[in-house]
Amino acid sequence: MLARSAAGSAEPGQNRTLIVVPSVLAVCIVADLRADAGPIGVTAVDKRPVDGPVQVGTHGLFGDVQADRERHGGLAQAVYAYGEDDAQWWADQVGHDFPPGTFGENLRVEGIDVNAVRIGERWRIGDEVLLEVTRPRKPCQTFARWIEAQRIAPATGWVKRFAAANRLGPYFRVVRTGEVRAGDVITVEPAPDGALRLLDWVRPD
Image (tube, rainbow, N blue to C red):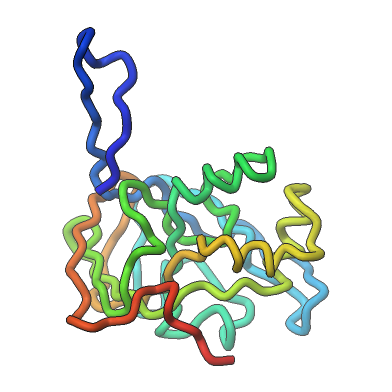
């Protein structure tokens, strides 16, 4: 878990911390297919938060799509999560906010270091959903063009910059379907002994 200072809650001479329970801050699905200069011609990177529960199937969240399923979809990349702490780090780096969905993520989460997970680690989310870490996100030019379109940073050099920061976030396969919603608690089931850390795993092209 992640410990954060609880400002204003401590008596003089005392240090108190607030333990942030791993949880879902926002559930995001595609808002609109956007024209893109890549080979597919469109992108579904424009994800935005939705209210209420969202059903999670084996191929991902209902109402969501992946325009390029060879690179950004399929059973092994059904759900993508990104950490709020990482989003805040990027905001400090570039001087621009990164609201939930900006990274093309389905789940914006807090209280857990998403880049310290291991391949095969499982997340129980809420009462129903069970996800298993499969691989890190590999940034692409579509993502870079989206960041430029949002006037966050130039597309040129963004892929290398994002990769070098080691704040990639994990993809998951869906082990058990069900509903997720903002506020759901995340319970981590450790990966098998010897499992690779997310950032040590290199996805083959």
